[in-house]
Image 1 (spheres, protein in one colour):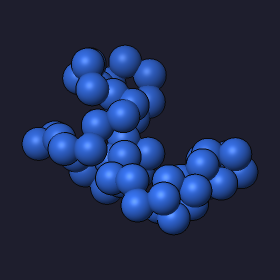
Image 2 (cartoon, rainbow, N blue to C red; image 1 turned 30 degrees about the horizontal axis):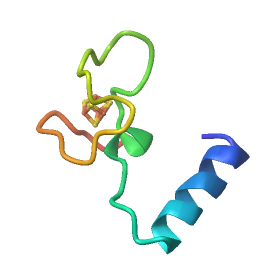
Image 3 (cartoon, rainbow, N blue to C red; image 1 turned 90 degrees about the vertical axis):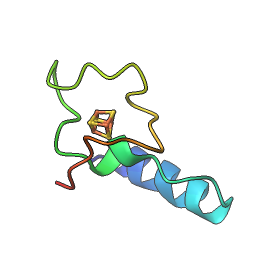
Length: 50
Ligand code: SF4
């Protein structure tokens, strides 16, 4: 995760926005996850923390 992504996550957290699961999910790369909610899923049955 780059500095801009980290900054964006902090801002969202401060604003009380729901956490985006994809940002910390081990399937969030390439074509591994085909879920249409990616990269903004806030609820996901396949979520696995990196
Ligand atoms: S499995 Fe779910 S949380 Fe993980 S990248 Fe795909 S949509 Fe996002």
